[in-house]
Image 1 (tube, rainbow, N blue to C red):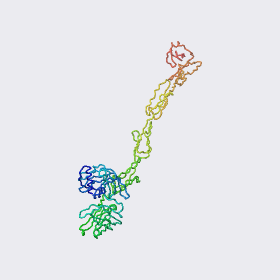
Image 2: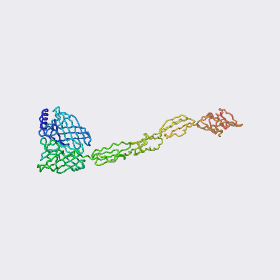
Image 3: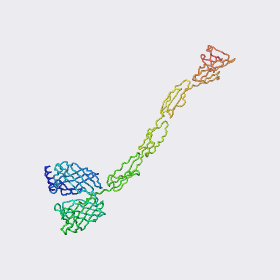
Image 4: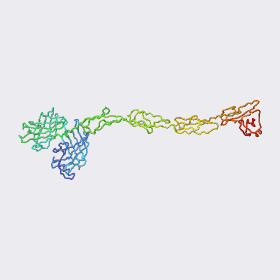
Length: 601
């Protein structure tokens, strides 16, 4: 193996033109033994740490500070990292397989003692990575294709192939290290057969040998039965065991071993202890040979259980339930500390949804039930008349809205300018109304002719038309014209009514006849009949038609005098029948001249 490693180192140095000088150191996660095989020549196992991150069946793999060789002959390769490796679930619960073939660039490691990392200088190189993984164990093979550079493929194997059987009748394969007087051998692959049933185990390490190569000492088969298994607290199907017993080692069955020394030792004390689960075994065997050889042989198979890796504590889960109006709408199991997201609840018109309990940001360490409900909303319903609020109230969604009664106002008509809905909607309601002044007809008719005919606002002033005076007539309205428009139509008629006047006929100072006549009526004087002694002297001047005032007409009877000439009167003193002196030029009718009645025409 050393010769092969030196060949690789020299070839790389020649290719890259640099010198080699390095040592090795490793870190953690899955810790197991790593074996490098080149051209069917395998290295001694060396401890290796592989960092693995798994998320939703996708794995990130990192083998840090990978080196070839040992001791002074170390060649630093670098860190082999692959992302997005798809995991495939196997038939065994919790066990996954993976395989990926891709070209990667190896990155530098972080060991200070390695001066030069050769991997990054190689550029992209093809790598085939495949294996199995579970909570407890990782097995992986890495084939690094260096045919173009070195005409060879480097095969890396980490861990041992996972056996998928149960602990009943099962063989565990892992590396075995023998320590004598604090000096340990190189790891060698060993197979241990186990049969566990009813908390009892049979253990068999077959073909146990000391040394390697030509210096091999065959010891034999170490078998112990009825080993008590003790369950490990808090770990499912994990058991501790410890037994101190004198046993006789039996012969192995390897043909190449001619002599098995174990059976020759007779009964020897053995301390066997360790831990076992269905996928991993760790065991130490202390073989007391103080009496025979003056020393104790310690055998260690596998690596101690790291429960933080093999059995990561599964977080507790609790039930988170959301109930709305008595009905469960969501129920799920969440780990303690997980982010809590309340389910989306349908909006409901006219209602407000609230969770009655506070929704925690993260899941507490207990079951949580959160109730929610829809609460009916209230909205403001307002009725306004002008700037005055006549009704205002907070009302529930869907409640019946009753329009308030508005008092009547004389001369006005009330209107709602915005119609209120029948029920309360999912918003505030404001209905606005106002009084609108009415208009009425004002009609004023004079003698059948409309002198005013118009629409006027209620309460506006009414201007009565001026009516001309007409002689002999009196004008009158059939109803009073109001000063302002009332709450109703107005129709007023005005008419001229003919006046009546009285005409009185006086005969010799006594009322002879008296008539009441319409203005303009034709006047007919009454007839007066005389006798043998007296004759009617005639009426004073009588108008043809009735004037616009009362009229008195006088007349008299004369004694035997028929006619007197005007000239006769001029020289004499003339008096009317009442005894008043009159101008003879204008005297008419019966007059008295010198004490005698005369009829003047």
